[in-house]
Length: 179
Length: 134
Image 1 (cartoon, rainbow over the protein chains, first blue to last red):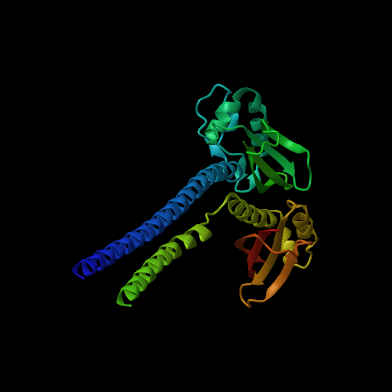
Image 2 (cartoon, chains in turn blue, brown; image 1 turned 30 degrees about the horizontal axis):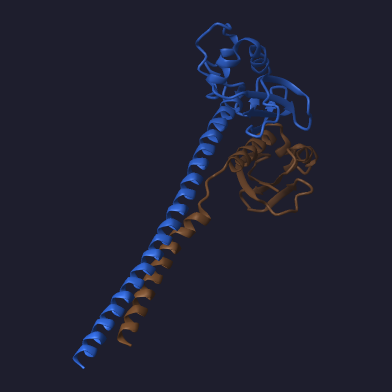
């Protein structure tokens, strides 16, 4: 009688222990699952952020380069009169006033392509990538002025178009492509 | 019975916490967005276009009733980009003219706007150009 009571007590205690172990295992599994889900989501968010940050940086560089070209005369403002060997070029702009492109500067930019391609794109903040600039009449496809090397439709190329007016009053599109 | 009740509370609490954590994380994942290249592009294109239409005298022509030159420019802008120009009399707030690029009925994906002012024949006009990508 005494033995059977003690056996029952042992069985009850063992069963309670088993329940606690199952509970702990279930909780542990859930916590592990949640942690993995959080880590996975955090990883994806982090990748997304890094990619977006890199795209934004690149877009901003391109934006600033196009702003400089279309809205400013460059620095120094008479850079188009400097010799090819001059080291005074700080930034490139081909506008005589905001959104008005100077034909003389656009032509000089085209001429410097053969000798100063790297210096010009470095001054635009685009030193590490192939850069192409074209000025085309609005609605036309043949460039009036062109500079640089086209990426040949590479998947990584990025294009920015700006609308401006030539100093003779004709509306043009300035297309800057990097990649 | 009491033990089962405690386990139920425990699981409910754990489930609630798990849901709360997921609820905090998922909205960030779904809605995290950054101003992208296309948005920057359309914004600049729109403000450039308004400046060009002012510099070429197309805005003044449109205010005086001849919008053919402005329409010609809008038609020649890049494919997929749409624009609507509006000139509002700054005194009476009346819309003087609205010029829209033809064939732009679809849902916009990226929207930008530019505004400026023009003084013409004794009156001030508020100019608005809305641009979007189809």
